[in-house]
Length: 83
Image (cartoon, rainbow, N blue to C red):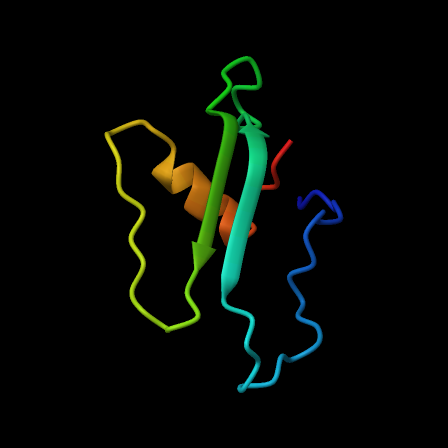
């Protein structure tokens, strides 16, 4: 038996962006996050990041193990939403 639950994030698609769109910035401002399976553990505690990739370069997110790199990427990809 499947559980019928409506997703919070629209995954069916939407407006297709033009290929020549010049929108190359990503910004996270004071992001706090806990995984739904462990709401008592705050993974990100007020993280702010701004990525300007107007020149279409490769951008890397680097840091120590456990510092939140995968969590940030998961939120950018909309697997999770910030609190």
